[in-house]
Image 1 (cartoon, rainbow, N blue to C red):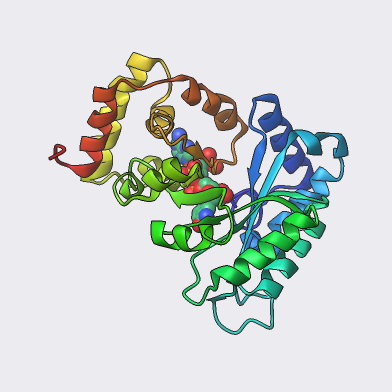
Image 2 (image 1 turned 60 degrees about the vertical axis):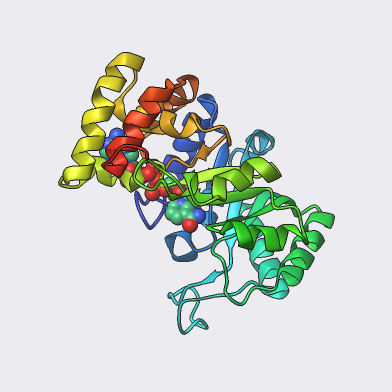
Length: 281
Ligand SMILES: NC(=O)c1ccc[n+]([C@@H]2O[C@H](COP(=O)([O-])OP(=O)(O)OC[C@H]3O[C@@H](n4cnc5c(N)ncnc54)[C@H](OP(=O)(O)O)[C@@H]3O)[C@@H](O)[C@H]2O)c1
């Protein structure tokens, strides 16, 4: 999301460098959405991928669809809205395949729950795309447990991509992660570092508490404080997969250290308490 026009505005060479850095350090999944960069980022990434066709098999490409954004590239959209019709999902998937210059997507997600969604129709689209070999898995993003249940009745939901971090702990308590465990759904965490606000904004009382708690843990576990916050996610039994938003190679290189750190239970709750501002009940 932040490698293209919505962030670092990478050149093709910069995309290639980051892809190589990721692959060299064991990060093989790349998260996209059709809308990123106002519908430009998939295509930019695809131009880089085209130069290294031999690497595709070692990568997983995930993308999302369902949001209609009224931007220059989509003059027919008049207001921001959702579309989860069968025809729209299929058209988006086919466009993403062309943009990314690949013949299959490892996963296609419905980006946001659409109040008008018809699970039978979504399942028909996913089933057709899967039968045609255009997607390997299908999933959702930002779905509540009841929305996942509704769709799961028609089609196996493989992924629910959710906002999860030390500053957004709702999924630990609202049933979303319980459901991932129950139904063997992979939880991907977007904004796993709270979109960087903890580090880059003027620290408020809560951020200060979290950073002051993370600092001694960083010393104890011998990793940087931001990686402690990723380790906070890895500690959960649902197998949360953080989706890193960084555009810095150095942060990619160190990120994998976090998956090797298992926080002690009390340390996990120290972070929980710092975020909540109170003890657990
Ligand atoms: N499904 C959805 O609805 C949804 C919504 C939003 C995002 N996403 C996905 O989730 C991904 C990650 O989201 P995100 O970008 O918000 O994640 P994030 O990893 O929480 O935040 C990334 C931001 O934090 C900064 N940052 C990271 N570590 C830092 C540090 N130690 N010190 C200072 N700044 C630091 C990065 O800056 P640098 O670039 O300088 O490192 C970057 O601006 C997106 O790229 C997108 O693929 C999905």
